[in-house]
Structures are given as C-alpha cells and as structure tokens.
Image 1 (cartoon, one colour):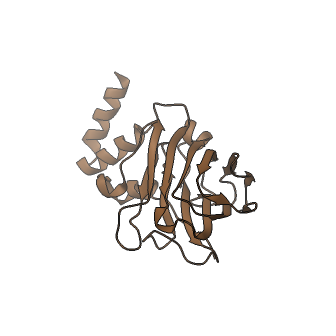
Image 2: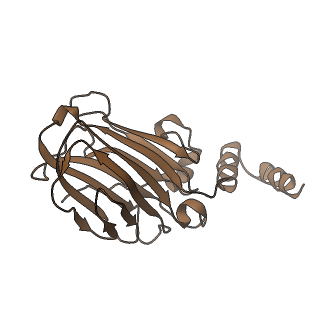
Image 3: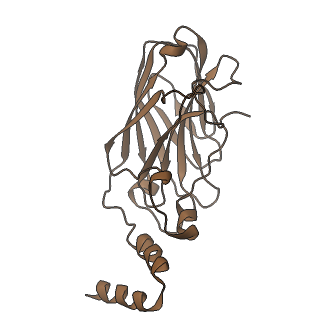
Length: 229
C-alpha cells in the first residue's frame, strides 16, 4: 500500500513523461542475482588461413563512476591456430585457450592474441561482480566487453563496419542487465558474431526501445573506447 501511495503522490506532482522516467529508474532493481552468460560464436570463413589478431577487452564507461564488474572468457575453441601468448594490458590474467579473466578497475583492459584464423571461434563469456549481481544505484556508467578481429599488423579491423573495430559488444547496464550488439561487416554483410544469452534478462538494443527523456538515456548510455591506439 505504501508503494501505491508513493506512486499516486508522484503522479499528482509530476508531468506524465517525468513520471515514466522516475518510475523506470525506481523499479530498475534486477530480479536476478547470478552472472550474465553469453555463448559467443565468430564466423571467420572469409579470412580462413590468414594471419591476424583476436582482440578481447573489458572497459569501464568512466573512471570513477563505474561499479566493479568482472568478465571471464571460458571454454575457448577454434579450428584456427593461436600464435604465442596474448599481449595483456591492464587488469587481465590468464592465457587462451584456458580462461582469461578481466576486471574494469583500470581504463583499458585488453588481451590481444595473434592467431592464424580458421573458419570459426567459440567461447563462453561470463559477466559478474557487484555491477551485475548487486547494482549500487549511484554509479553513473556501465562497462563494455568487446570482441574485435584485426590484421596481422594490428592496425586494420577485419569483418566489421564499426569505427571502433568491434564485431560485437555486450554492455553492462546500470541495473545489472546486459545489452548485446553486433555490427555489419565492412562490405555491409551480416554480422560475423552471434551473442546468445544463456542466463539473465537481455535489454533490447537502444535503437529498439523507448528511453523516457534525455536524463534516463544518459544513465543507460555507455562509453566505448577504441581498441588500439
């Protein structure tokens, strides 16, 4: 009853559009407590047999202002060939094909793995930590996990039209939910990556949902950083 009375009081005081924004934020408490898990599949037939780099990174939208989150790349497999050890930058540990573990407490957290591409790459992405399981309600930005494919020099992105070099990303939103996004190829073809959720809710891409006012849109918006300088 007290919850209903609160809504009625707000309704009498605020315009309709503002009411929708306030209720949307007030009720954005996640109904799940587990990690976000995605099955990631990358189709690399178009570059089969060529040398290049797989880039995996997990970055905060802003520092400070981003709640702690972690990302793990598990169960990696490919018919391509990994070449040497990945170059790790920031808060990243591990080595493919075993688990890579990231957190978002430095601005740039990157694993840059040389490989000879085969026809495909698969792994499981697990996003966890307080930002996912217990959002604090005061953070101002989320985090982004990104997947990129690069040429052997690490200069030119492959199979994507995204100017930042991503073939796909997953954003962690301020309410702990996840938003996966994939990008067309550089020739306008379908995305080469699929991001299939295995647990937890998925928020539609921002272009497919209605954001109630620029204030709420600002809460959800995340900063994406370029992969390589």
